[in-house]
Image (cartoon, rainbow, N blue to C red; front, side):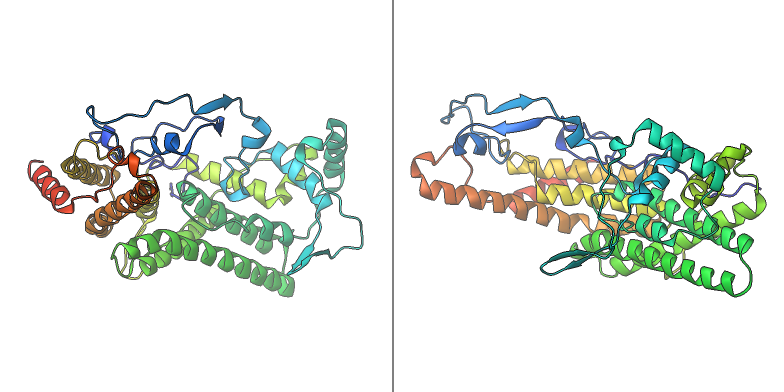
Amino acid sequence: MAMFVGQIQTNPYAGVGMSAARATVPLASKQTPTAKYDRVEIGTRSQVTAHSDIYTPGPSQMRMLETPACTKVAPDSSLIREILPPSEEPSYTEEDALINQYMKQFRADIYLYGDGSENASSEPLKLILKDDISKEDLEKFRGELAEHGLGDEIDWRGVKSDFVQIGINFGNVERFEQKADYLASRYAVLKDRIQTQFTGDKQEAELQKLEQIYTEAKEEMANTYAESIGGFFEDLGQSGAAEDMRNSVLALVDQKANAYTDYIEKNRDYVSITDPDKQWLKQDDGYMAAQLRQSAAASQAEPHEQPVNEQAPYDGNDLAFAGIYAKTLSQQLENPKWSVYDSDAALGQHLAAQYSALKTSAGNAGISEKLSNMLHSSFDPFMDRLMDSLDALIDSNRGWVAEKPWMSGTIRTSYIDRRSVYRSFQNAISKV
């Protein structure tokens, strides 16, 4: 019987965008990626302000002559390479496992104090990067693993280290479900190993360690999601959103952990390692968990919906959608990209198109009625916050004009006419 325990794939809601230029595009359409190049600004303060996207002078107004304001420099690949925690890595192959085990030889405990740090080890601290490992040393280490394995003891230190960055924030919310699957699958693999390998008091002690580490990581994921995503919606007037989301994350991770555990019981051959020189991989719980996720994802056809209850009302689909949507709105509030050159009424039309895109996207995504209602209820407060952000930028323009009166008329200093915005918004909505 097929059972859904999560999939390893790109989040389907990644790149949710709602710019005015693409108001007719569904909410889940991807944004154009930002060009990757180093930029050096060369120019005056007034030149930079002209690019602020807050005001564009009319054809009858004075325009500033501009010179090229930036120089493009080829990026350094070693500087732009993204470093992801284990829970966000797209894969964990045999070669990854080999390098990971090799790097563990150089681990050191460091205690940090208010005025510095102290190495707890009496041995000199040696730092090594993956690129510094020679092919010869790596192959020699591979032979040692083939001969001696990793040992029977579980590397709890490594497990804790891999869970350090398990939290959810606006920087990684696109990988929320991937991180939940990572945590749940590691738990299931470790639980199976303990129950298979140990007995008696040893088994009980190891299971207690696992439960403690798993619970702490799960709560870290739930608390950070509730603080970032839930907190954002709370700020938009959605009382109780943070607690509902926290409880839903906890329930989702437990559901996935139980499903992975059941899958192992019913599919003991989810990974086949027959090569005698590769038996050490069975002792690498990170590798086994990656194989478990791949096997489980490939074996099922339709996802299993989490039952909705009063304490944990959102399933994984809801939480993924809410996270991406909150991030999109948050970015708009922090860095509004709206030009008010046409009219404030045009802003109302833009927001109406964005609201319509939300309804379309939410319907296509199949989110719950509860989440859909909450997102719709948060849109009016979002509109107010967006206009607050625009007014704040106009405040800075006012200050600048006060210092340089001769610039009056070239940049906007009048606040957003909110009545005009809302009137235009309602008119546009009524025609949909």
